[in-house]
Image (cartoon, helix red, strand yellow):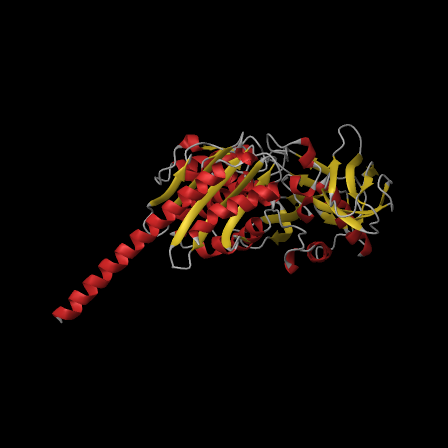
Length: 471
C-alpha cells in the first residue's frame, strides 16, 4: 500500500513538473516568435496585443499589451454571445405575434392586422427549414385563413418601445448597403439581405449589367456604376443606400467575363419587403388587403387585448449563437444586443445593449475593468469599439465553466487548426478562442492587431506563426 502511494505521489510530481516545463517552453517560444512578429515591417505603425492563459490553472502563459483597448472587429462577437447565454438563456426564443383588435363581420376585418415584432433575426432565414420565407408565410396565411377574415384594411407593425434606428453608431457608409452591414430592426426579414445578380463585359473597363435580384425588391431600384476588372480580382463592389431617393447605386468592380456574378446587399426596407411578400401570399389565398400599411412607434392599443391568431417562434438561442459565431452574422449581434437591453429594462438599441453587456462583464467579478470594454454595438463592425485581449480571454475563461459552454463552443470556426473566432475590419485583424496542444495542454488566447500596413493575407500568416507556438 505504502509503495503504491509513494509511486502515485512521484507520478503527480513528475506530471506537475512536466506541465510547468511545457508552460515555460510555450512562454519562451511565444516570446521569441513575438519578438520576430513585432519587428516585422507590417507592424511599423501598428499596435498589437496578445494574451494567453493556461485553461486549467488560469496562469498567464504570455502577455503583451493585454490591457490596451483595441478595435476587436468580429472577435467582439464572443463577448456578445456569452452575454446572450447569461442574460437570455440557451433556450430563449424570439416571438413575433400576429393578431387584430377590431371585430370581424361577414369576412371583413374593421381594422388592420397587427404585427408585434420582437427583433427576431431569423424570420425568413434560409438557415433552418422552419424559418424559410415560404415556411413563415405559409403558417401566417394558414392562421389568418382560419379566422375567417377575407378582407382587411392593411398591416400595422407595432414597434412601440423599440428604437427605429437600425444602424448602430460608428458604422461606415461603405458597409451599411452591403449584406454584412444590415442593421437589426424590430422586424427583420430574410436576414435583411438580398442577392444582386450581375453580368460583366468581356473586357477590362466594360460596363456591368444588373440582371436581377433574389428576391425581387419591392419599391426600390438599383443602378450599376460597376466596371469590369481583370479576371481573378474578385468582388470589389460596394452598394450604397440612397439618401433622398429609392434608387440604390452599386460601384466598384467585378471580374470581366462573368455571366452570373452574385453579390449580396442589405435590404433597404425589411418591413416593406416582408409585408409586400405576405400580401402577395394572402392574395393567392383569396384574402385581400384594401388599405395601406403603417408602422407605428407608439400604439394607442393595449397589446394584452390583441386577438392573436398566429405566433412565429425562432429557433433557440443555442442554435442562433452557432450561426452567429460560425458565419459571423452582424445582424444577429445587433439583435442579441437589443434583446439583452430590453431584458435588462433598457431601451431597444444596439448602444444600450452594448453598454449593458460591458457592465455585465465588468460586474461579474472575473477581473475585467469597465474601461477594458468601450463598445458601441454587438457585432464588432463599428470601428469605434475598443476591447482588451485580457477582457476577451476573461470572458472565454468564464464561459468554459458554464453549463451552456458546449453550445457556445460549437459555433467557433477553425483557423490554423485552432478553434478561433476571427475578426476583420479596415486595418484590423484579430483571433480569439481555444486550443489544445498535441501534448494535451489547453490554452485560451486573444490576439489583436490594429493599423497594420500591407496585405491582410500576409499579416495573418505571420500571426499564425506566433500562434503555432501553442501547438
